[in-house]
Image (cartoon, rainbow, N blue to C red; front, side):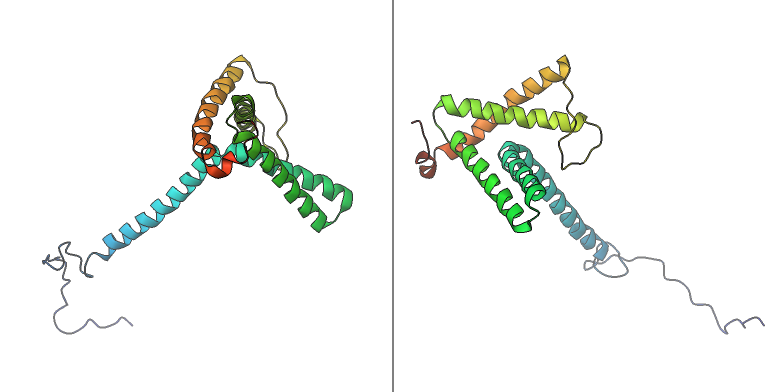
Length: 191
């Protein structure tokens, strides 16, 4: 059986959107909720992207300072775990190795004397830029172990050298701000 048609005239659809001073967009649901939701979503996405980009810039900027202590902590932890099979001992060795390397790095980087400071900055910059080059050009591998070593060609060696000099210059500019503090002066070995 087919349903009977309704009696009387069919209701017309109100498809005309009227704009008023309270509703300038003519949105039938009110005050432009879609626009407000789009703005809120844009702020959330923009804020999240800003955090990711800021974290990436900080990681690239302070890469040499973070890389050496973390690598020392990881390698010490792996060695102690292989020998002792003790979680607390492994964690303690990793933390101690990371702190020792961070302290040695700190001592080298806050020096005013170019005899200690410039070679340390150049070495850390070379390790960081060369390590990035090695990581980016290596075949897929486990990120917890170093990539397989392959010698750079002449163009790659030139690019790593130029990148090291540029990075060391930027790194020295950043370090000059930290080296002028009163706390840094007490740790300077050569005045």
